[in-house]
Image (cartoon, rainbow, N blue to C red; front, side):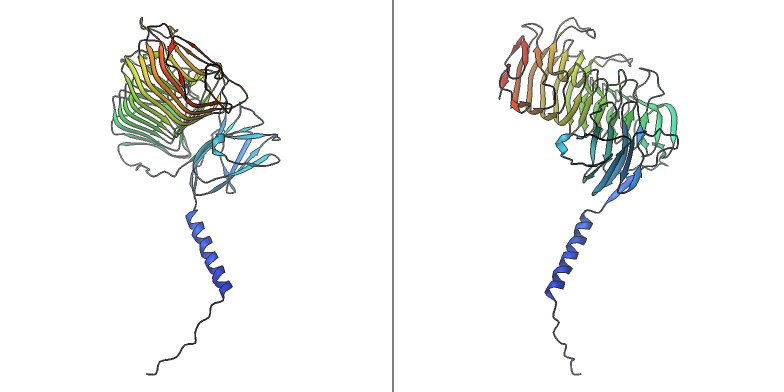
Length: 461
C-alpha cells in the first residue's frame, strides 16, 4: 500500500503562547484549589448584632459573647472575606500586626484575603470591648467514627446540655463544627485521651468558679485540639499533675473572673501550639501545689513546657505569660515561650511575669521571638515575695532567664522590675538580647525603664 503523504503542520506562534498561558493559569488554579467548610450554627445560638461576615460571597454565622464576636470555619487555598459593621468605620486594625494582612475599607465594610489558616482579631474604631475574632482553621485530617464506642460525639447544628462528662482512658470527645455544648469535661487519671473538633464549649450557664470547661487531672498523653471555649466561669483548660499534654489550635474567648486560659500545674512535657487566648485573667499560668479544685497533691516539679506560635490578649486582671504565684514545688524549669504575638495586655499587672511566692527554684526560662503590640501594665515583672497565695515558709529563687528577639510597640511605654527577696533568695543571670522597646534596643536599666533589687548577673546583648 502506498503511504499517504501528510502536509506539514504549522502552528501559529501567538496561539501557542496563548495556549501555554492558559495551561499555566489552569495549573495555578489547581495549586490554589480551595476547600471551605462553613459550619451550621444551632437555631437558638446567639448571633452578634453588629457584625456580618461573608467568605467568597457565602454568609458565615457570627457568634456573640459578652466580650467579643467570633466566627469559626476551616479552609485550604485562598479565600476572600468581607466584614460588614453596623455603624460607620473610622479606623480598624487586623491583629496580630505581624501577619501584615492589608484590609480594604469601603464605607462600613472591610475586605481582605487569607491564604493560610490564622487566628485574628479585627478591632473597629479602637473598640477593645467588641472585637471580631476570625478563627480560620486548617482542614481536619482526622474525624473519628461516631459509632465507635470509644467516641463521645456531639452533632453539629445542635445545642447540647450534657452537664459534667467524665472522660476515661482511650476515649475521644469529638465536638463537630456547628455544635454548641453547655457543659464541662473532666478526666481523672486517664491515658490516651483526645478532645477534638471545630465545635464550641460554652460555660455561660455555670456559676462562678463552679467547673472548668476541660479539666485534666493526673493524666498522660492528652490532646486538646481545634475547639473554641467561651464564657468560662473558672480556669478554662487546666492540667494538674499530668504528663505529655498538647493544646493545639485551641481558641478561648472569655472575660470573666478567674477565667485563666491554660493553667499548667505540677506537670511535665506540655505543649501549647497555635492557640488563641483572650481572657480577663492570666492567659498562660504555670504553677505547682495548687489545691483549689482537686483532692490530690500537685506539688510536683514542673519541667519541659513549650508555648509557641500563639496569640494572647490579657484583659484587666492577671498577666499574659505567667509563672506563679503558687510555686509550691522544688523546681520549675525548662520553660520556653517562642514565636508568639501578645496583642493586648489591658490591666495593671504584667506581660512577662514570674511571681515566685513559694519555695521553688525557677530556672532555665526562655522568651524568644515575641512581639508585644500593647502592654499597659508592667512589661517584665519578676518578683520573689510573700503573697496572698503563699504557703511555704521559705522563699525560692529565679535563675537563668533569657529574652531573645523581643519587640514592644504600642501607645504606652511600659516599665519593668526585677525584684529579688534578699541576697540569699535573689534573682540571677537574666539576659536581654536584642530586646527592643519602641524600636530602641535595650542596653541598660536606664533606657529599659528597669528597676532591680537583689539581682545579679543582669546583662544586655
